[in-house]
Image (cartoon, rainbow, N blue to C red; front, side):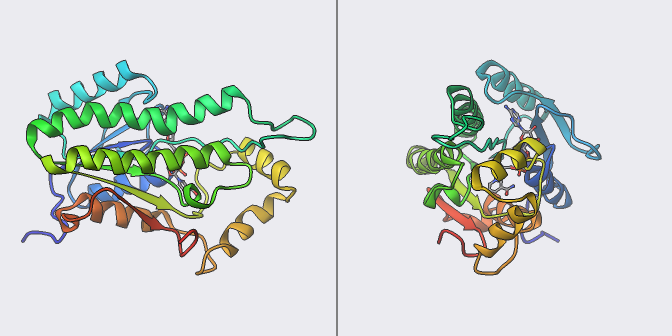
Length: 259
Ligand SMILES: NC(=O)c1ccc[n+]([C@@H]2O[C@H](COP(=O)([O-])OP(=O)(O)OC[C@H]3O[C@@H](n4cnc5c(N)ncnc54)[C@H](O)[C@@H]3O)[C@@H](O)[C@H]2O)c1
């Protein structure tokens, strides 16, 4: 019997699929019988049935080689999820300069979150155009709309990916390729919340580590963090033909934050 999402044997590339939100969506895609390719800097744990390709999405050459490899193995690409991302808290002006925004942080954030998605979208779209079908999903963040204290460049990078989503949809949708962004809100902890992230965030926001979760959660209408599965559920729906009339837009999955 055909499953409602009908993702069986679909070839799905997930960048940043070794950890957090990406890892959870890879598990959900596999549960639906999809052929999952994890593209990451780090080898995933406990994901034996996935194909793993080590690739830095900021390198155009590595991305092109990765897409060639996927085409050699599977012959086509149905879905790309641009999920790899970094968040490095910094203030525009920091009184003691410890966590002040500099060119290194600015460039790294834009390189991974924006240029990385561009490299992957371009390389995959070339194959998808030959097939006359495909879905490109870009993981943004709800902070793209409101901005975020100590996350100005991160928020700007996510606003950029949402803007790219709208333009790429105009270019590709007439040829059967949907492009959609998903904007998660405050989530349960992932590797994104590293020790250096927490230290920088506490310094910049004048809060204690315990307060990070509670201030985020208070900002949602539902008074709680989002679960990784809730992002995965939305991604799988958007990747499927059940979302066949959705393109060129951003879907917030944020418990009502930044509506
Ligand atoms: N966690 C949240 O609260 C939250 C909220 C909104 C949006 N997001 C977005 O969701 C996405 C996933 O975040 P997460 O919380 O799961 O983070 P995470 O740190 O757990 O996972 C990110 C993955 O991306 C990989 N990666 C980083 N740079 C890369 C590169 N240059 N090339 C290839 N892979 C690279 C990392 O190795 C890691 O496995 C990100 O785009 C993030 O901005 C997260």
